Amino acid sequence: MRGMWIASVVNINWPSKPGLTADEQKAEYLAWLDVAQSRRLNSVFVQIRPTADAFWPSPFEPWSQWLTGTQGQDPGYDPLGFAVAETHKRGLAFHAWFNPYRVSMQSDPAKLHPDHPGRKHPDWILPFGGKLYYNPGIPEVRKFCQDAMMDAVTRYDIDGLHFDDYFYPTNTTAFDDAATFAQYGAGFPDLATWRRHNVDLMVSEMQQRVKEAKPEIAWGISPSGIWRNKATDPLGSDTNGGQSYDNLHADTRGWVKKGWLDYIAPQLYWYIGQPPADYSKLVPWWSDVAAGTDVQLWIGQAAYKAGDPAQVAQWQNPKELSNHLTLNKNHPQVGGDIWYNANDVRVDRITSVTTAVNDHYVRPALSPVLPRLANGTKPHRPVLAVARTRPGGVEVKMVATGRDEPFQFAVFRSAERLSSFDDATNLVAVVPGDRIVNWLDPDGKRGDYYYVIAVDRANRTSNPSNPFKVVF
Image 1 (cartoon, rainbow, N blue to C red):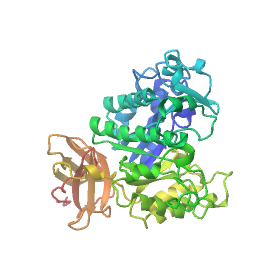
Image 2 (image 1 turned 90 degrees about the vertical axis):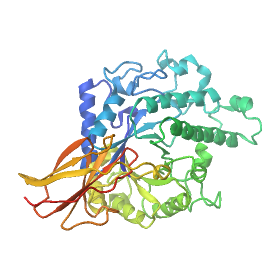
Image 3 (image 1 turned 30 degrees about the horizontal axis):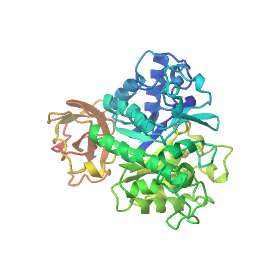
Protein backbone atom coordinates (compact mmCIF):
# COMPACT_ATOMS: atom_id res chain seq x y z
CA MET A 1 0.00 0.00 0.00
CA ARG A 2 1.22 3.44 -0.98
CA GLY A 3 -1.55 5.91 -0.29
CA MET A 4 -2.24 9.48 0.73
CA TRP A 5 -5.19 11.09 2.45
CA ILE A 6 -6.99 13.89 0.58
CA ALA A 7 -8.99 15.75 3.24
CA SER A 8 -12.07 17.85 2.51
CA VAL A 9 -13.21 18.98 5.96
CA VAL A 10 -12.62 22.74 6.42
CA ASN A 11 -11.13 22.61 2.90
CA ILE A 12 -7.83 21.14 4.11
CA ASN A 13 -6.94 19.73 0.67
CA TRP A 14 -9.82 19.46 -1.79
CA PRO A 15 -11.54 21.66 -2.70
CA SER A 16 -8.99 24.19 -1.47
CA LYS A 17 -11.77 26.64 -0.64
CA PRO A 18 -15.56 26.66 -0.88
CA GLY A 19 -17.29 28.17 -3.89
CA LEU A 20 -14.86 27.16 -6.63
CA THR A 21 -16.51 26.42 -9.96
CA ALA A 22 -16.99 22.82 -11.01
CA ASP A 23 -14.14 23.15 -13.52
CA GLU A 24 -11.84 24.63 -10.86
CA GLN A 25 -12.65 21.79 -8.46
CA LYS A 26 -12.02 19.22 -11.16
CA ALA A 27 -8.68 20.79 -12.06
CA GLU A 28 -7.63 20.75 -8.41
CA TYR A 29 -8.50 17.08 -8.08
CA LEU A 30 -6.55 16.16 -11.19
CA ALA A 31 -3.57 18.02 -9.73
CA TRP A 32 -3.80 15.84 -6.61
CA LEU A 33 -3.67 12.76 -8.83
CA ASP A 34 -0.54 14.23 -10.42
CA VAL A 35 0.97 14.44 -6.94
CA ALA A 36 0.09 10.82 -6.18
CA GLN A 37 1.67 9.64 -9.41
CA SER A 38 4.77 11.79 -9.01
CA ARG A 39 5.37 10.18 -5.59
CA ARG A 40 4.83 6.68 -7.05
CA LEU A 41 1.74 6.04 -4.93
CA ASN A 42 -0.96 3.59 -5.94
CA SER A 43 -3.98 4.73 -3.90
CA VAL A 44 -5.81 7.81 -2.70
CA PHE A 45 -8.08 8.03 0.36
CA VAL A 46 -10.56 10.82 -0.36
CA GLN A 47 -12.83 12.29 2.32
CA ILE A 48 -16.34 12.29 0.83
CA ARG A 49 -18.51 12.48 3.98
CA PRO A 50 -16.66 14.84 6.32
CA THR A 51 -19.55 16.24 8.42
CA ALA A 52 -22.68 14.13 7.86
CA ASP A 53 -22.90 15.60 4.37
CA ALA A 54 -22.05 14.28 0.95
CA PHE A 55 -19.76 14.74 -2.02
CA TRP A 56 -22.36 12.94 -4.16
CA PRO A 57 -26.11 13.38 -4.70
CA SER A 58 -27.15 11.47 -1.58
CA PRO A 59 -30.76 10.71 -0.67
CA PHE A 60 -29.70 10.62 2.98
CA GLU A 61 -27.66 13.76 3.67
CA PRO A 62 -27.24 17.18 2.03
CA TRP A 63 -24.51 18.31 -0.32
CA SER A 64 -21.38 19.18 1.64
CA GLN A 65 -20.80 22.79 2.58
CA TRP A 66 -17.10 22.30 1.80
CA LEU A 67 -17.99 22.21 -1.91
CA THR A 68 -19.93 25.44 -2.35
CA GLY A 69 -19.79 27.15 1.04
CA THR A 70 -23.50 26.43 1.56
CA GLN A 71 -24.70 23.09 2.85
CA GLY A 72 -27.25 21.56 0.50
CA GLN A 73 -26.21 23.55 -2.56
CA ASP A 74 -25.66 21.48 -5.70
CA PRO A 75 -22.05 21.99 -6.93
CA GLY A 76 -23.14 21.49 -10.54
CA TYR A 77 -21.57 18.07 -11.02
CA ASP A 78 -21.04 14.80 -9.17
CA PRO A 79 -17.67 15.17 -7.37
CA LEU A 80 -17.52 11.53 -6.27
CA GLY A 81 -18.39 10.18 -9.70
CA PHE A 82 -15.80 12.43 -11.30
CA ALA A 83 -13.11 11.59 -8.74
CA VAL A 84 -13.58 7.82 -8.99
CA ALA A 85 -13.50 7.84 -12.79
CA GLU A 86 -10.42 10.07 -13.03
CA THR A 87 -8.58 8.12 -10.34
CA HIS A 88 -9.13 4.87 -12.21
CA LYS A 89 -7.99 6.44 -15.49
CA ARG A 90 -4.60 6.86 -13.81
CA GLY A 91 -4.53 3.23 -12.66
CA LEU A 92 -4.90 4.33 -9.03
CA ALA A 93 -7.25 2.89 -6.41
CA PHE A 94 -9.95 5.10 -4.86
CA HIS A 95 -10.75 4.57 -1.18
CA ALA A 96 -13.83 6.49 -0.01
CA TRP A 97 -13.09 8.07 3.38
CA PHE A 98 -16.02 8.65 5.74
CA ASN A 99 -16.28 10.23 9.16
CA PRO A 100 -18.93 8.10 10.85
CA TYR A 101 -20.43 10.37 13.55
CA ARG A 102 -19.35 14.00 13.13
CA VAL A 103 -22.29 16.21 12.11
CA SER A 104 -20.89 19.73 12.13
CA MET A 105 -17.80 21.76 12.95
CA GLN A 106 -20.06 24.19 14.83
CA SER A 107 -22.58 23.57 17.63
CA ASP A 108 -25.82 25.26 16.52
CA PRO A 109 -28.34 22.79 15.02
CA ALA A 110 -30.22 25.73 13.49
CA LYS A 111 -27.29 26.30 11.14
CA LEU A 112 -27.71 22.86 9.56
CA HIS A 113 -29.58 22.62 6.28
CA PRO A 114 -33.36 22.48 6.90
CA ASP A 115 -33.50 18.98 5.42
CA HIS A 116 -30.50 17.72 7.38
CA PRO A 117 -31.27 14.58 9.43
CA GLY A 118 -30.03 16.43 12.52
CA ARG A 119 -32.82 18.98 12.03
CA LYS A 120 -35.45 16.35 11.34
CA HIS A 121 -34.33 14.24 14.31
CA PRO A 122 -32.95 16.65 16.92
CA ASP A 123 -32.79 13.78 19.42
CA TRP A 124 -30.13 12.14 17.19
CA ILE A 125 -27.48 14.80 17.75
CA LEU A 126 -25.46 16.01 20.71
CA PRO A 127 -23.18 19.04 21.08
CA PHE A 128 -19.63 18.66 22.35
CA GLY A 129 -16.55 20.85 22.17
CA GLY A 130 -18.08 23.37 19.80
CA LYS A 131 -19.22 20.67 17.36
CA LEU A 132 -22.25 18.46 16.76
CA TYR A 133 -22.21 14.67 16.71
CA TYR A 134 -24.63 11.90 15.93
CA ASN A 135 -25.32 9.94 19.12
CA PRO A 136 -23.78 6.49 18.53
CA GLY A 137 -25.91 4.90 21.26
CA ILE A 138 -29.18 5.21 19.34
CA PRO A 139 -29.75 2.13 17.14
CA GLU A 140 -31.60 4.17 14.50
CA VAL A 141 -28.62 6.51 14.24
CA ARG A 142 -26.19 3.66 13.71
CA LYS A 143 -28.34 2.18 10.94
CA PHE A 144 -28.85 5.58 9.33
CA CYS A 145 -25.12 6.32 9.25
CA GLN A 146 -24.47 2.92 7.70
CA ASP A 147 -27.21 3.46 5.11
CA ALA A 148 -25.80 6.88 4.21
CA MET A 149 -22.32 5.48 3.66
CA MET A 150 -23.48 2.32 1.89
CA ASP A 151 -25.29 4.50 -0.63
CA ALA A 152 -21.90 5.57 -1.97
CA VAL A 153 -20.55 2.01 -1.81
CA THR A 154 -23.41 0.54 -3.83
CA ARG A 155 -23.72 3.33 -6.41
CA TYR A 156 -20.06 4.06 -7.17
CA ASP A 157 -17.13 1.99 -8.37
CA ILE A 158 -14.99 2.61 -5.29
CA ASP A 159 -12.14 0.35 -4.16
CA GLY A 160 -12.53 0.73 -0.42
CA LEU A 161 -14.61 2.06 2.45
CA HIS A 162 -12.45 3.86 5.01
CA PHE A 163 -13.14 5.28 8.49
CA ASP A 164 -10.86 7.78 10.19
CA ASP A 165 -10.03 7.94 13.90
CA TYR A 166 -13.08 9.78 15.26
CA PHE A 167 -15.65 7.73 17.17
CA TYR A 168 -17.01 8.95 20.50
CA PRO A 169 -15.46 12.40 20.96
CA THR A 170 -14.31 11.80 24.53
CA ASN A 171 -14.96 9.84 27.69
CA THR A 172 -15.91 12.85 29.79
CA THR A 173 -19.38 13.55 31.12
CA ALA A 174 -19.60 16.59 28.86
CA PHE A 175 -20.84 14.31 26.06
CA ASP A 176 -24.32 14.05 27.48
CA ASP A 177 -25.58 10.62 26.50
CA ALA A 178 -26.65 9.59 30.01
CA ALA A 179 -30.30 9.47 28.97
CA THR A 180 -29.44 7.25 26.01
CA PHE A 181 -27.49 4.94 28.30
CA ALA A 182 -30.46 4.76 30.63
CA GLN A 183 -32.69 3.80 27.69
CA TYR A 184 -30.42 1.31 25.91
CA GLY A 185 -27.68 0.35 28.37
CA ALA A 186 -29.39 -2.40 30.34
CA GLY A 187 -27.00 -5.26 31.08
CA PHE A 188 -23.82 -3.20 30.71
CA PRO A 189 -21.76 -2.55 33.85
CA ASP A 190 -20.93 1.06 33.01
CA LEU A 191 -21.20 3.81 30.42
CA ALA A 192 -17.77 3.14 28.91
CA THR A 193 -18.45 -0.56 28.26
CA TRP A 194 -21.76 0.30 26.61
CA ARG A 195 -20.14 2.95 24.43
CA ARG A 196 -17.48 0.49 23.25
CA HIS A 197 -20.25 -1.97 22.46
CA ASN A 198 -21.97 0.64 20.28
CA VAL A 199 -18.78 1.31 18.32
CA ASP A 200 -18.14 -2.44 18.05
CA LEU A 201 -21.57 -2.84 16.49
CA MET A 202 -20.84 -0.09 13.96
CA VAL A 203 -17.57 -1.78 12.96
CA SER A 204 -18.80 -5.38 12.83
CA GLU A 205 -22.03 -4.47 11.03
CA MET A 206 -20.18 -2.35 8.46
CA GLN A 207 -18.00 -5.34 7.69
CA GLN A 208 -21.04 -7.50 7.03
CA ARG A 209 -22.75 -4.89 4.89
CA VAL A 210 -19.64 -4.24 2.79
CA LYS A 211 -19.03 -7.96 2.23
CA GLU A 212 -22.65 -8.51 1.21
CA ALA A 213 -22.86 -5.51 -1.14
CA LYS A 214 -19.33 -5.29 -2.59
CA PRO A 215 -17.24 -8.25 -1.41
CA GLU A 216 -14.18 -7.23 -3.45
CA ILE A 217 -13.64 -3.80 -1.91
CA ALA A 218 -11.44 -3.17 1.13
CA TRP A 219 -12.93 -2.16 4.48
CA GLY A 220 -10.69 -0.60 7.09
CA ILE A 221 -10.04 2.04 9.71
CA SER A 222 -7.16 4.41 10.52
CA PRO A 223 -7.39 4.79 14.31
CA SER A 224 -5.25 6.86 16.60
CA GLY A 225 -2.02 5.00 17.20
CA ILE A 226 -2.32 3.88 20.83
CA TRP A 227 -4.89 1.26 21.82
CA ARG A 228 -3.94 1.25 25.52
CA ASN A 229 -0.75 1.90 27.45
CA LYS A 230 1.01 -0.97 29.17
CA ALA A 231 0.59 0.80 32.51
CA THR A 232 -3.18 0.54 32.03
CA ASP A 233 -3.32 -2.90 30.44
CA PRO A 234 -0.54 -5.52 30.20
CA LEU A 235 -1.58 -6.12 26.60
CA GLY A 236 -0.96 -2.46 25.75
CA SER A 237 2.02 -0.78 24.15
CA ASP A 238 5.05 0.62 25.96
CA THR A 239 3.71 4.15 25.64
CA ASN A 240 2.11 6.83 27.75
CA GLY A 241 -0.36 8.65 25.52
CA GLY A 242 -4.05 9.00 24.73
CA GLN A 243 -5.77 5.60 24.62
CA SER A 244 -8.38 4.98 21.94
CA TYR A 245 -9.95 2.17 23.98
CA ASP A 246 -10.67 4.50 26.88
CA ASN A 247 -10.86 7.97 25.33
CA LEU A 248 -12.71 7.25 22.08
CA HIS A 249 -14.29 3.93 23.11
CA ALA A 250 -12.64 2.33 20.10
CA ASP A 251 -11.34 -1.19 20.81
CA THR A 252 -8.94 -1.11 17.88
CA ARG A 253 -6.93 -4.14 19.01
CA GLY A 254 -10.13 -6.11 19.51
CA TRP A 255 -11.33 -5.35 15.97
CA VAL A 256 -8.14 -6.85 14.55
CA LYS A 257 -8.18 -9.92 16.77
CA LYS A 258 -11.86 -10.56 15.93
CA GLY A 259 -11.20 -10.16 12.21
CA TRP A 260 -13.74 -7.35 11.73
CA LEU A 261 -11.53 -5.40 9.28
CA ASP A 262 -9.66 -6.06 6.06
CA TYR A 263 -6.92 -3.69 7.21
CA ILE A 264 -6.02 -1.34 10.02
CA ALA A 265 -3.91 1.77 9.45
CA PRO A 266 -2.90 3.17 12.86
CA GLN A 267 -1.80 6.77 12.79
CA LEU A 268 1.74 6.49 14.16
CA TYR A 269 2.45 10.20 14.06
CA TRP A 270 5.53 10.11 16.31
CA TYR A 271 9.23 10.08 15.58
CA ILE A 272 11.60 7.22 16.30
CA GLY A 273 12.59 7.46 19.95
CA GLN A 274 9.84 9.93 20.89
CA PRO A 275 8.72 9.84 24.51
CA PRO A 276 6.06 8.95 25.52
CA ALA A 277 5.03 7.37 22.19
CA ASP A 278 7.96 5.90 20.29
CA TYR A 279 7.42 4.93 16.64
CA SER A 280 9.99 2.15 17.01
CA LYS A 281 7.96 0.60 19.85
CA LEU A 282 4.54 1.00 18.27
CA VAL A 283 5.34 -0.67 14.94
CA PRO A 284 6.40 -3.94 16.64
CA TRP A 285 3.36 -3.73 18.92
CA TRP A 286 0.91 -3.35 16.03
CA SER A 287 2.76 -6.01 14.07
CA ASP A 288 2.23 -8.42 16.95
CA VAL A 289 -1.47 -7.51 17.04
CA ALA A 290 -1.86 -8.23 13.31
CA ALA A 291 0.26 -11.41 13.35
CA GLY A 292 -1.81 -14.54 12.88
CA THR A 293 -4.85 -12.62 11.62
CA ASP A 294 -6.07 -11.89 8.10
CA VAL A 295 -6.06 -8.16 8.84
CA GLN A 296 -3.56 -6.16 6.82
CA LEU A 297 -1.40 -3.60 8.67
CA TRP A 298 -0.65 -0.30 6.96
CA ILE A 299 0.99 2.59 8.82
CA GLY A 300 -0.29 6.16 8.86
CA GLN A 301 2.72 8.46 8.36
CA ALA A 302 2.91 12.08 9.59
CA ALA A 303 4.11 13.88 6.49
CA TYR A 304 2.53 16.99 8.03
CA LYS A 305 5.10 17.08 10.83
CA ALA A 306 8.24 16.71 8.73
CA GLY A 307 9.94 20.07 8.34
CA ASP A 308 7.23 21.96 10.22
CA PRO A 309 9.10 24.77 12.05
CA ALA A 310 6.81 24.28 15.06
CA GLN A 311 7.99 20.69 15.49
CA VAL A 312 11.00 19.45 17.46
CA ALA A 313 14.44 18.82 16.02
CA GLN A 314 13.80 15.19 15.08
CA TRP A 315 11.15 16.31 12.59
CA GLN A 316 13.70 18.60 10.93
CA ASN A 317 15.71 15.56 9.81
CA PRO A 318 14.98 14.87 6.11
CA LYS A 319 15.59 11.16 6.76
CA GLU A 320 13.04 10.72 9.58
CA LEU A 321 10.18 9.47 7.42
CA SER A 322 12.48 7.34 5.30
CA ASN A 323 13.83 5.82 8.51
CA HIS A 324 10.26 4.86 9.43
CA LEU A 325 9.92 2.84 6.24
CA THR A 326 13.33 1.27 6.81
CA LEU A 327 12.22 0.17 10.28
CA ASN A 328 8.98 -1.21 8.81
CA LYS A 329 10.98 -3.61 6.66
CA ASN A 330 11.98 -5.52 9.79
CA HIS A 331 8.30 -6.28 10.46
CA PRO A 332 6.77 -8.38 7.67
CA GLN A 333 3.24 -7.72 8.92
CA VAL A 334 3.56 -4.11 7.73
CA GLY A 335 2.13 -4.04 4.23
CA GLY A 336 2.62 -0.37 3.38
CA ASP A 337 1.92 3.21 4.35
CA ILE A 338 -0.62 6.02 3.98
CA TRP A 339 0.59 9.63 4.14
CA TYR A 340 -1.18 12.49 5.87
CA ASN A 341 -1.91 14.68 4.17
CA ALA A 342 -1.87 15.34 0.43
CA ASN A 343 -0.64 18.91 0.76
CA ASP A 344 2.41 17.84 2.75
CA VAL A 345 3.14 15.11 0.22
CA ARG A 346 3.08 17.82 -2.45
CA VAL A 347 4.95 20.60 -0.61
CA ASP A 348 7.67 18.23 0.62
CA ARG A 349 9.30 20.50 3.20
CA ILE A 350 13.01 19.70 3.73
CA THR A 351 12.74 17.01 0.98
CA SER A 352 11.50 14.47 3.55
CA VAL A 353 8.94 12.95 1.20
CA THR A 354 11.21 12.75 -1.84
CA THR A 355 13.89 11.21 0.39
CA ALA A 356 11.46 8.46 1.42
CA VAL A 357 10.31 8.00 -2.19
CA ASN A 358 13.86 7.79 -3.54
CA ASP A 359 14.89 5.38 -0.78
CA HIS A 360 11.84 3.10 -0.81
CA TYR A 361 9.62 3.71 -3.84
CA VAL A 362 12.22 3.10 -6.54
CA ARG A 363 9.94 0.65 -8.36
CA PRO A 364 6.19 0.81 -8.89
CA ALA A 365 4.05 -1.23 -6.48
CA LEU A 366 0.86 -3.20 -6.92
CA SER A 367 -1.75 -2.68 -4.20
CA PRO A 368 -1.97 -5.58 -1.75
CA VAL A 369 -4.45 -8.43 -2.18
CA LEU A 370 -6.77 -8.90 0.79
CA PRO A 371 -6.27 -12.39 2.27
CA ARG A 372 -9.98 -13.19 2.02
CA LEU A 373 -9.83 -12.54 -1.74
CA ALA A 374 -6.48 -14.15 -2.50
CA ASN A 375 -7.99 -17.46 -3.61
CA GLY A 376 -10.52 -15.91 -5.98
CA THR A 377 -10.42 -16.34 -9.74
CA LYS A 378 -7.28 -14.86 -11.26
CA PRO A 379 -7.43 -12.65 -14.34
CA HIS A 380 -6.78 -14.29 -17.69
CA ARG A 381 -3.20 -14.36 -18.90
CA PRO A 382 -2.72 -11.43 -21.31
CA VAL A 383 -0.88 -11.46 -24.60
CA LEU A 384 2.13 -9.26 -25.24
CA ALA A 385 1.58 -8.56 -28.93
CA VAL A 386 4.69 -6.54 -29.69
CA ALA A 387 7.64 -4.71 -28.19
CA ARG A 388 9.62 -2.61 -30.63
CA THR A 389 11.78 0.47 -30.64
CA ARG A 390 10.19 3.79 -31.40
CA PRO A 391 11.42 7.37 -31.12
CA GLY A 392 11.66 7.94 -27.38
CA GLY A 393 11.86 4.32 -26.24
CA VAL A 394 10.20 0.93 -26.68
CA GLU A 395 6.52 0.62 -27.54
CA VAL A 396 4.83 -2.26 -25.69
CA LYS A 397 1.43 -3.47 -26.92
CA MET A 398 -0.55 -5.61 -24.45
CA VAL A 399 -3.88 -7.31 -25.11
CA ALA A 400 -6.44 -8.62 -22.63
CA THR A 401 -7.78 -12.10 -23.34
CA GLY A 402 -10.57 -12.54 -20.77
CA ARG A 403 -14.14 -11.27 -20.89
CA ASP A 404 -13.38 -8.53 -18.34
CA GLU A 405 -10.70 -6.00 -19.15
CA PRO A 406 -7.97 -5.79 -16.48
CA PHE A 407 -7.89 -2.91 -14.03
CA GLN A 408 -4.14 -2.63 -14.63
CA PHE A 409 -1.26 -4.16 -16.52
CA ALA A 410 2.06 -4.68 -14.74
CA VAL A 411 4.98 -4.41 -17.17
CA PHE A 412 8.27 -6.22 -16.51
CA ARG A 413 11.53 -5.63 -18.35
CA SER A 414 14.79 -7.56 -18.11
CA ALA A 415 18.02 -8.05 -20.02
CA GLU A 416 17.34 -11.79 -19.97
CA ARG A 417 14.41 -14.17 -19.71
CA LEU A 418 12.60 -14.16 -16.37
CA SER A 419 11.39 -17.11 -14.33
CA SER A 420 10.07 -15.25 -11.27
CA PHE A 421 7.69 -12.33 -10.92
CA ASP A 422 7.32 -12.44 -7.14
CA ASP A 423 8.92 -9.07 -6.48
CA ALA A 424 9.37 -5.71 -8.18
CA THR A 425 13.00 -6.13 -9.20
CA ASN A 426 12.06 -6.02 -12.89
CA LEU A 427 8.72 -4.20 -12.61
CA VAL A 428 8.97 -1.00 -14.64
CA ALA A 429 5.39 0.25 -14.86
CA VAL A 430 1.81 -0.26 -13.73
CA VAL A 431 -0.49 1.14 -16.40
CA PRO A 432 -4.30 1.49 -16.51
CA GLY A 433 -6.00 -1.50 -18.08
CA ASP A 434 -8.11 -1.75 -21.23
CA ARG A 435 -8.74 -4.32 -23.96
CA ILE A 436 -5.64 -3.13 -25.82
CA VAL A 437 -3.00 -0.85 -24.33
CA ASN A 438 0.02 0.70 -26.01
CA TRP A 439 2.65 1.97 -23.60
CA LEU A 440 6.01 3.62 -24.33
CA ASP A 441 8.94 2.67 -22.11
CA PRO A 442 11.43 5.55 -22.27
CA ASP A 443 14.19 3.38 -20.81
CA GLY A 444 13.72 0.33 -23.04
CA LYS A 445 16.24 -0.73 -25.66
CA ARG A 446 16.93 -3.37 -28.24
CA GLY A 447 17.68 -6.75 -26.68
CA ASP A 448 15.38 -6.28 -23.69
CA TYR A 449 12.75 -8.88 -22.79
CA TYR A 450 9.25 -7.74 -21.81
CA TYR A 451 6.40 -9.48 -20.00
CA VAL A 452 3.01 -8.23 -18.83
CA ILE A 453 0.70 -9.40 -16.06
CA ALA A 454 -3.00 -8.53 -15.83
CA VAL A 455 -4.26 -7.17 -12.49
CA ASP A 456 -7.93 -7.19 -11.50
CA ARG A 457 -9.82 -4.83 -9.17
CA ALA A 458 -9.05 -7.04 -6.15
CA ASN A 459 -5.34 -6.76 -7.09
CA ARG A 460 -5.12 -10.44 -8.01
CA THR A 461 -2.56 -11.09 -10.73
CA SER A 462 -2.60 -13.33 -13.79
CA ASN A 463 0.11 -15.64 -14.96
CA PRO A 464 2.76 -13.74 -16.94
CA SER A 465 2.33 -13.26 -20.66
CA ASN A 466 4.54 -14.65 -23.32
CA PRO A 467 7.99 -13.02 -23.35
CA PHE A 468 8.77 -10.63 -26.17
CA LYS A 469 12.33 -9.71 -27.04
CA VAL A 470 12.97 -6.35 -28.68
CA VAL A 471 14.79 -7.20 -31.89
CA PHE A 472 14.13 -4.08 -33.98
